[in-house]
Structure formats: C-alpha cells, structure tokens
Image (tube, rainbow over the protein chains, first blue to last red):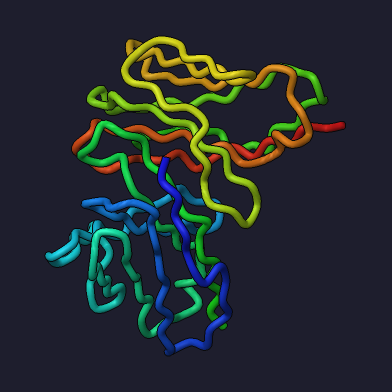
Amino acid sequence: SAVISQKPSRDICQRGTSLTIQCQVDSQVTMMFWYRQQPGQSLTLIATANQGSEATYESGFVIDKFPISRPNLTFSTLTVSNMSPEDSSIYLCSVGGRFQNTEAFFGQGTRLTVV
Amino acid sequence: QKEVEQDPGPLSVPEGAIVSLNCTYSNSAFQYFMWYRQYSRKGPELLMYTYSSGNKEDGRFTAQVDKSSKYISLFIRDSQPSDSATYLCAMSDRDDKIIFGKGTRLHILP
C-alpha cells in the first residue's frame, strides 16, 4: 500500500484568497488524483495529475479555479483559488485505482473552511 | 438514477451484532469494488477490494458482490465500538474514474 502525506490537515481562510495543498507519496506513481468531499456528498474527482503534462480536469472543474502542479513522480499540489464559502470542503489526494489493477489509497485530507 | 446508491444512515447497532452495509449500482461495466472506512476528520481507509463477483473475507469483514443484481455488501461480524465510522462503497471499470457512494454512518453502541 502507498503512504500519502497531505498538508495542511486543516485551514480556515478568508474569501478571495488562495490555498495550496501539498501531497507527498512514499513511492513513485504515474498518476495522482485530487478529490473533493463536501458534507453529505460522495467523493468527487476534481482532476488527474500526470507528471510532465497538464492535469486532466473533470466536468465542472477548471484549471483557473483549481490549478495543479506535478513536478515529480512523488509530489503534487492543488491550489484552491479565489475562495468562496462554497469551497469549504475536504480535499483529498489519492493514488492507484484508475487505469491500474490496484486499489485506490487516500491521504488524510485537508479540511478547508472559507469565511 | 444515480450510478451508486448508498443509504446514508445513521445505522446504530449494539456491540457484538453483525452489521450489514449495502450499495446498489446501475453501471454493469463496473468490475472493481471497494469498501472504505472513514473516521471523523480522517481520509478514507481501504477495507476491502474485490474484483468481479463473489465473496472475500478478511478477519471480521466480508465483502460480497452480486453483479447480476448490481448489489454489493459489507458484513462486519462481532462489531466493536471502534467500528463506528462512515463506510463508503466505491466501484470502477478500471479505466474510468472511481464512483463512490455517499457513505453510511455506523454507530456501534457499547
């Protein structure tokens, strides 16, 4: 199994500001995934981060709002830009699952509150 | 019809009881089925991972997949207060994204 470290674990931010969430994996992986978990809702895939190429965003998510970096095979960042209270959620980094015959593993999540 | 349906609960059962958690789905292409446990303020933790139909057992946990009925289950035997958490079902067809249920909140009463 993969060990995924995510930080910060939580933050309270002012509306209009941006927050960058970091995700570190203990092994090299081709793809990393970013999810959002809103209260009472299922996990929703935001984007897939591939090393050396642009991230692939799911319907309803755009690069200007959620820019992603993937500088190497063990690290990725997700930025939540120009935040509003609607962005208050848990953001999760994940590896495995898609395109691979392996299960998906998750970081501990970043609990974001926008005030 | 949503792709994955899961009763949100909460489900409260006495300690020692057998717990049954279920999900139904609509996409017959799903081949990989997973159950995650998520404690409050933590990320999802993989409990069971099953490919195609059948049963899989791991300690007190048993996962069942019935592809003909598009129905999956997780059974917890000898439930403990430490099993109190939200349980998420998830499924995929390998090359497409994983689809999650909304989760069932489980409370084991001492």
